[in-house]
Length: 129
Image (cartoon, rainbow, N blue to C red; front, side, top):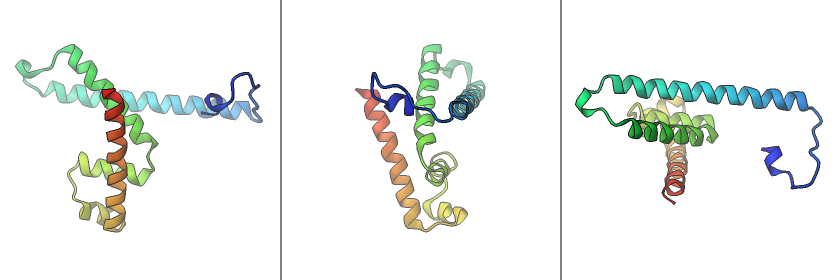
């Protein structure tokens, strides 16, 4: 992000370029593994689907792209916000159950879920445009 936020024409000022490049490489690697994990989970779910209900290859590619976009948005959220959202949406926990399991107040869980949903809505509106 530092590279992207610098002004055009200005020289880049790095005090520790090796550490910066190591961080970038680490994050790219994590993103690759996360994407592969998402793809494998989706393909495993497709394998359970009856053949006559299996979506087209184009539809499968669109779903994988959408999952990747959602994953990128969720990765930007604070850890507890992301965890609460995933517990709610993927595991079906109620707000009270999430609060209990994460040691949070019910109000905090509400705020976390609202923030995560807000980010998903922003993503959806950007995708629709």
